[in-house]
Image (cartoon, rainbow, N blue to C red; front, side, top):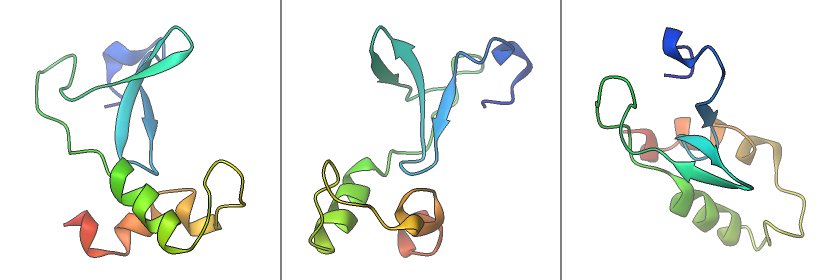
Length: 83
């Protein structure tokens, strides 16, 4: 969706860690649940699962170094979460 021709301004962003599309809302992010152009439902966010995976390693995502594979979609592509 971030490559859609109507996204020429780059207003829709993608965070591969969480498999989320979002737009800036002031200093916050507003997650999108549907494509703003066609209305198709987007995949559910993997944000909760990401925090669970980080916590399972005994890490604090706000203060500890997060492993490289958890900084992209590699962690969920390699797991059953991708299904």
